[in-house]
Amino acid sequence: MSPVDIFLWGAVPYISFAILVVATIIRRVYFPETWTSKSSQFMEKKEQRVGIPLFHIAVLFLIFGHIGGLLVPKVLTMALGIPNHLYHMMALTIGGATGVALIIAFLILAKRRFAGTKRMKATTSIMDKVLYVVMAVTILFGMLATFSNVDGSFDYRDSLSIWFRSLFLLQPQVALMASAPILYKIHLLCGMFTFAIWPFTRLVHVFSGITAPFCYIGRAAIVYRRRKIDEKALAGERALEFPEGVKPQGETLR
Image 1 (tube, rainbow, N blue to C red):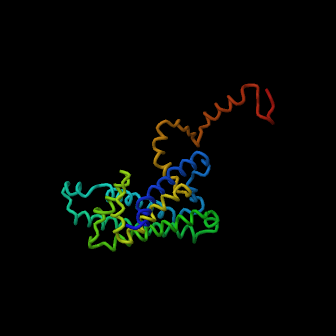
Image 2 (tube, rainbow, N blue to C red):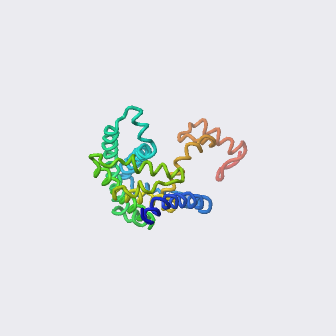
Image 3 (cartoon, rainbow, N blue to C red):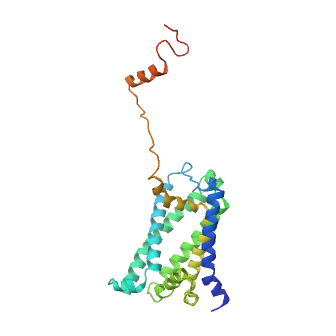
């Protein structure tokens, strides 16, 4: 193993995670007014109606897929009666289809962001541009890594997964990543870089989305008023507003 491998696969994961945690806390505590997704729905809705739901659904599927592939040990799926070749085919078909959906959604949102109206371009920050570039490279190399391993010659659950789980034990098995294909390495590096820039982008709204359901439990009820008020109720309200002997301005008293 080279010093570069030790740094990339033994130190960078912890550095990116530390930046994610510390910078997120600092932004939340000291810059709460910037904690927003910067919604641009009022500027353009047509493409957003398709792109945003598709993007979020695809991301959720990929998150669960990555969790299953990286955290679930191979011996467990084998014990459940799922042979390795079947697991690989499921990951390839479901992951590939989800990846294609993610690419379509990403292209829709990128077109909307960078080739849309002047107002959309004016509200696009430098970090938005950086985020889109990083996401594009991450998605690209993730798809390349997936389809370059159609035959299953590289079993990432015998290397990448074990390395990933070893990070939680604070004993990273760097050698497993050092021998991994370059496409997987680039994809993982892009993923770690995404976590490092996460607190400085609009992605912080994801944490609000996770905690939002719990905030509704203790929130006070919202009272809505009817739009149409019958004449009787209206007369009653006016009677309270102007008691007997008091008339609105411009009217004579009794």
